[in-house]
Image 1 (cartoon, rainbow, N blue to C red):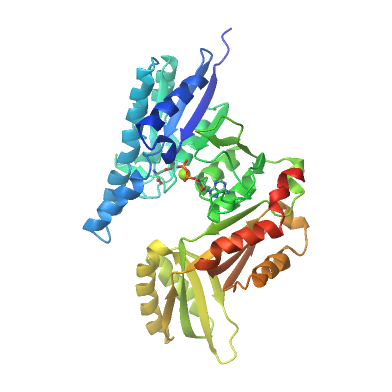
Image 2 (image 1 turned 45 degrees about the vertical axis):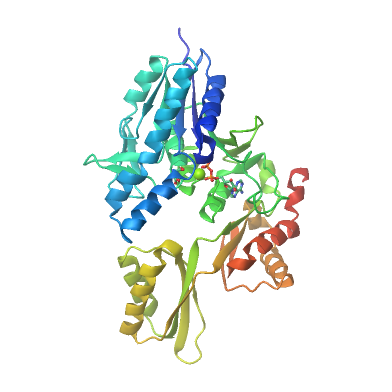
Length: 412
Ligand code: ADP
Ligand code: ASP
Ligand code: MG
């Protein structure tokens, strides 16, 4: 009886394939994994900053380019890198074949720029694997029912990898990036950051949603739902990285496992809003009608029947949000609409927070000691976030890292 071959999915991010030498390095790395008894599917991102550069080109032509055309444009980056990697692997003597998302049956809905994967018809991948080829798939993209190309949201190559690992029942899903694993916080900002051996899906999802760029949040949602362990590791250094897993008893002992910092939001305040039932419902309904997602919302207590309402939106939505909010403010008889681009969200994350007390107080005291003013606060079961001035963001991350002794996390 023939045993099923081990199937490995590997994903290489943009900086791992930023130039010809790095693509050669990835080809070598891939071939080191390939044995006679395994099958390999490799997902790649676009070269270096290609996706940003493509977006910038479009924005030179229009402030509001159509989403459909943006997907046509932005998906090309991955088409280049997957073809180049297939060429590099062939040059090293192994058969390989590159595919776009559409060619390997990644079927999505029609929500351009943030499409959701409905299903993957992996017959073509399976056939190529059976023929002994290393399969290279362009990340971040799929195809809608009307055959249009769609993209899966920024960072979406992670999602391509996890979704393929699920569909193909992969034995291993490895995400190769430019840092050696998941750290307690961004190691580029806090040099004391520690690489974690393991982190739960729940904590990783929270960190990713709160701005840790290293994994796309949507990919972790899928990994969590289908229990697909992920190994995040370096494309440049050969060492074990971080396992993202369902649970580990030991993992529940620390209160705070990570700190994130997100500078992608802006704050809008509507002043002197009439304090009566239905006003908040009206404001946020109108804002959602123009397709803008709102994050943290704060409404002050009113003593004068007028109140201020502040909320955050993605910086990229700010202009649209200001226009919509000014209209709303007129309609409800409220006052001035103010905005602030210089805000950052700094958050602490840890599933142990559920069973530890005094975490919020310690966070606020730490920021106060550094004279950092807190503008807004939000909490979830396993995180606390403060909106602060963006100029203080790195200082806040460093001091919170020290206050929660995260440099010692691997000794706990
Ligand atoms: P890729 O191109 O491989 O997808 P990304 O740039 O999307 O890589 O993500 C890797 C980057 O994420 C790192 O260079 C690092 O600066 C940043 N990062 C932010 N938070 C963390 C964290 N907690 N652990 C590791 N890296 C982090
Ligand atoms: N190239 C895409 C981006 O920059 C997808 C990815 O890198 O995962 O968002
Ligand atoms: Mg990424």
